[in-house]
Length: 173
Length: 330
Image (cartoon, rainbow over all chains, first blue to last red):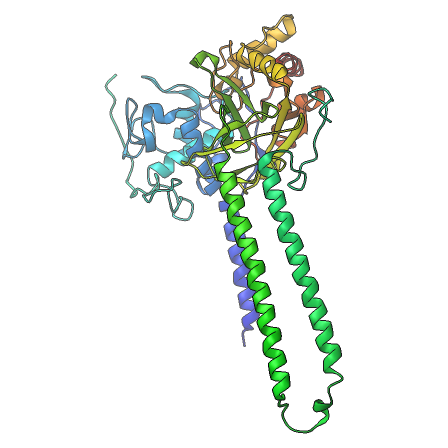
């Protein structure tokens, strides 16, 4: 005979433990900005931040704020729709679509105008931006992407896109 | 109190210590409500005690069967309930009339020629702007407002991220700031001195450390302060402070902060042009001193966890240079 109270308690416990990652705010574990960060030998950043930030709702919303603050929308357009810089909401990716490759693009810059933010913003902030870019692309987990826009007026949040399979885009150099 | 120097008194923060006409009106209304409520409570207690005491002596209760009141009792009860209802209605009408009148007076408070100040609430600091006749004359600062005492101040309030609430308890009620809405209100500080306020609507992790300071000074002192705020930041004079300035201009600081007259023109964080003249650090997270500034630059998360400012890994020499430079920005 299963004790109903026990099952209920176990379900609540499961829910609490599963929800923690989504809402975790790692203020005590924030890494400082290192102006002279060297690249690792393979030229790729460590993947430690990738999973945590892309599964963390706070990181995605911080990324949304930083996207405006550091003027990413100035080139990539409001909501990442594309302006003088390429759109981040479509399926075409010139320099890689994985969280690690997006992190590399933001940290080290890319040809034709993408600045390098390494040493100017913290690594955590770059991971947060990368998580937001993933969300713009429709690849944020459903429980992490915001369910409503921040503005008062009714509308869709900037990250409610259907997921598209990323494909590489040829760039004429 | 008015004879003290302009930077003298630090007034205790509280709505029960009104120091401006609006706060006075609110406090008086509150006082009326309090005494009326106390009167009603006293009457209720007296009536209840009397009813219990009198009820125990009634001979009717000793008879078996349901209690049937006599005609006389019915008349007494009708008169008593009728009188109480009338008193209640009159008191409520009094409260309603005075409440509406006070609300009207607060809304109509519009003395001529106010000084215009723009206040923008961020998470978790206040941006203060004094627009001038020319765009060049705009003075921007953070977390600290200076006003001439006794002069009406027209505040243009807004929030850029979440709902905040502007509250200077000694001067006025709370003004909720909903993003995309602008609130205009006029306040007036009658007494010289320093008033403190805070954000009054939960706005995130550091809502408790979003303090505001308003300094009411003589017109002469205020004009002198405003003139200083309009000037560019002080140029560094020693090699250490010059190195500090370079670090601020070329490093991460310039991405968010602006210091007028330098190449740091970020628009995201508080303006630091006259940072060292403020009374507190990080909107009340700590009093401003060499030690607290040093700790703040080393790791802001220690003083104000959750703050948007990241730590920068600097060598001790660089950290000292940056602290020294920022301390010169009076």
